[in-house]
Image 1 (spheres, each protein chain N blue to C red):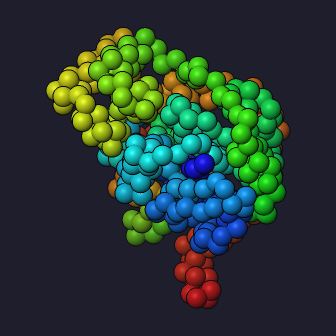
Image 2 (image 1 turned 45 degrees about the vertical axis):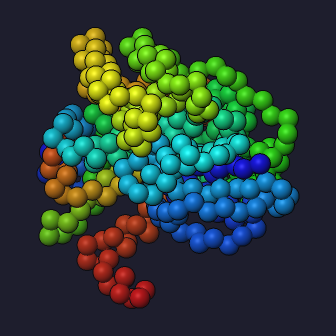
Length: 74
Length: 291
């Protein structure tokens, strides 16, 4: 799961089906979908949000949502 | 003449708006600064410019985004000015395609050429213009460079655009679009193809508009039928994802043809600052210090 990656690690998204519909749509609009590569740039403490980087843009995402995104470490 | 300003969030629409109209609207370097439409007058004192909130796609997820769908459906604009972030074309062009499908004359303002260049991306403006079939003017909205030329391009009288469809979405989608087009009355002045595609993509504002003309069961059945077909024959997950993929294919082709990518990954200044101020230990002290 994306939420389990550590800072600096990279992953390829394999499954988004567990993600909330609106979040999925917004991620799609930002160009993040199954097959995209993301890297974790920063993780806030106490279960806070994490900052992701994908194709030159940074986005913040809740830990809860990140734990529903299945990734493959690369 | 009324000209609407459209683009992704944080691409410099309001900066450009201020340059073109000489007004002083509030500009901020984050998304969602503009949440309602604003109207200003061009420096030529004839044409009006309408500043709209930034959107990633026409389908609204929030209220400020619904402003844009409502504008497309109910307001009158003679021309559309689409502003793009040259360093994020892959994402930005999804909106451009939807704007072109709307069927009104479009001019593209290619912003942040300087930022793109720093990231090792060089865009061939003429080639991009040829692919999209509309004029493209490079600008730097922050400093105002190229804005006069852009104003001239969009307000000039002699302006033609092609009627041909930019993207062929495959037999299943095109059939559904045709079916919808036939159900719509001829009195509609909006592009029926645009309405149909937006509806199929799941745009709720468009759906409620179409309900004025078509029964709810007919619409729902059409979507269900198409979804089944795409799942069986194209192995697609959903209609919106399938349409998105078709657009991505087209964008990929455009970018391969119009971008010279030197591709050296420089660490940008923003990255360095970000690393400092979002550091888990230093972040809050720096924040308090600035306060």
